[in-house]
Length: 88
Image (cartoon, rainbow, N blue to C red; front, side, top):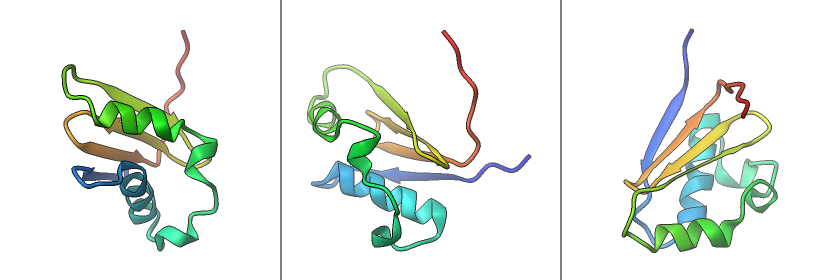
């Protein structure tokens, strides 16, 4: 099984924009062609707050209609087109 994974280092002023860029790169489209607002799937302010703190490692993952996105404190943004089923 082939998985498409995009990794981007987000050490730029706008982490939400870097997330949108990573998603658009994984889809092979321009960022303005993304058909859903990022804010409908994740709290953008919370992600920015996490990105601005560096005391502890963290990982945030969220589901989009056709991707799973993972953002890590080490700067990686992963977009994986194969969703995993999870349960608690």
